[in-house]
Length: 362
Image 1 (cartoon, one colour):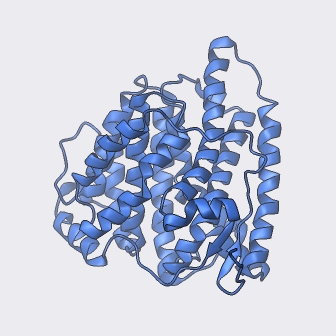
Image 2 (cartoon, rainbow, N blue to C red):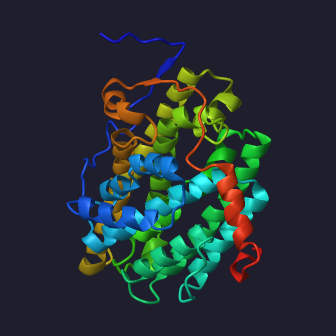
């Protein structure tokens, strides 16, 4: 029988114990995974060891658990987006503010000018975004409000990640609300959920309705809380625990790790209660729109559930022990480690593209 060692282990709460959305894996997972993995590898974003470690994280599983109710084309696009986010995350994790700004400029230009010619081989993140965006736009009608919303949310995400890079360099800790204000953007949750709208033809006034807006905001909040709970063990090992809600809770409230997790659980319960109450308060806009809104809200709920499932089923945070963690809720601290990208790879990529037109400042 395993014994618990409080010096090297901690217990994580089951934040979604009362979450009504069940685990659901898309039947298109394997096909979409094969296609999107080959797509990522075609860019050679990491060396061989880094790519193997990246593949073990299986971001395709994340998309297939979170967008699970959608068709094959949508799942493929979702896989591409998740893979892009985590490639971008690895690049910015070793970047300073100037380098992160340069990376953001490449991606923003690809979003705003998707019809431009393919970028050079050195502009990995820009070309990944351009190709993803070309496929994503085929999922919805031209001029749909979700397109503008995705672009705007993506810009917020990219600028916030640049701020995160500066915080990391300066080892800056923020208080909880200040941290969450930034993290709601750096998690990529807003553009991720904006993608959920693609193909649903939901009018702008419906998405902007206070109840739908609150549901979206609280789904983003739960994505942050679930992700930070699971990712803390990895971020602590990588020296990045200052950009994690658990680190912020410990810093502001002068709590030890296990106490901070109790604080997190209580906070999450309030968010979940508000979300479920708002689900019951959604108004009607007529059968056709209501059907699309139902798909959207189920998409929010499934994203929160799937994010938790993936955190344990893939190897990003717990290696091969994720399912054991899911059952026991016991996490063992890791020794110091680094990410998948070597700093010299980032420097060389930026050096090669620094003279090209798409690398202008923001």
